[in-house]
Length: 265
Image 1 (tube, rainbow, N blue to C red):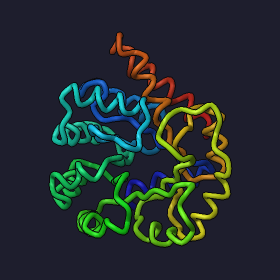
Image 2: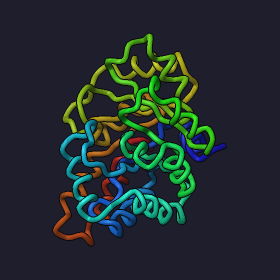
Image 3: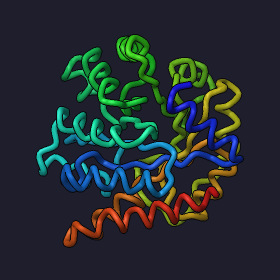
Image 4: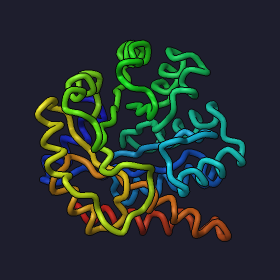
């Protein structure tokens, strides 16, 4: 069983959803990023979703845009992101998923991008702006190199497209719980159980829910309906809050992640 499937199966055996933590690779710098990745893993997350810093992250709200800017300003490149993955992978079997954009995959060659990521220890790739109708080359590269694909379903996705999206997915479905971009929200979107059920009618793969989830209560609520819960901005904001004292970032982030993970225990 691959690492992603094992993570979701282990969570299911414990009668809970898997916790997926998003961080931007290289935020605020390489060494701190390695430390915070290890910190959230020690806090008990099940899947680490690493954003590959990009200059035009169209699906991201301000929090994650600024994280990408900090990472790029610190000198992060594709090669440095892969080195970061290698360092994190050396100490953990927690699955790692890239959250990226097609420009970054295409610019380095689709096959080479997938091959290099897999060799570094990445288990799955979510390419935000690549619909399955345009993704044949990417899907073929993932199949060749044993990379799992993660595809997005949105509240606006029509039922007629669900079979195509699910057929293109080999890792898990990421249900975006609200329209718009990433970011913390005071209130959860409605209709999540119904949306998850609608997706699950077309696939046996796990369905994780993200966008706007930021408190233990929200994690618990979503975890009651989904196979996975994705939290990003609430974690990234901890990094931002401690930029004036970098030594505090990793311990503060570990405490925040543990608080959120507890919502599923």
